[in-house]
Length: 144
Image 1 (cartoon, one colour):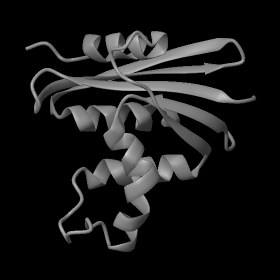
Image 2: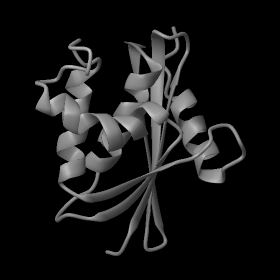
Image 3: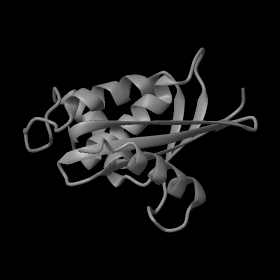
Image 4: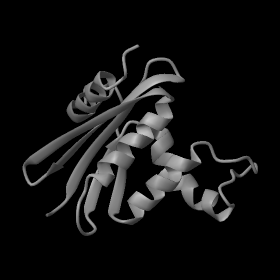
């Protein structure tokens, strides 16, 4: 199947408030767009849901994935904080409970099933795929 590119983004109208997420999966000249939303959430949770749902959409064996996000929270969480949180029983370095533990556990499980390299992109800076997933996320925000 070759390398898969995934682009993810989350959006919130108010923080907390209604939110949406969007993802773009690209492989061998094929593309798939995904999106969803929640009535009461946070921007960070929507960023995380985009990653979870994008990885959940992959069927079959382990894949090699380049995942692009504009969320430093997601990027640092996976690359820097996750191992320590798990080692401390889902506590931060200051012994506080990890925020969004439910979603971090899902990300940990999803990432461990594949060979995922996370890449940070600057949001709202004209990056074509990031702009595209931002539009998907904003469009998925539930309207009152």
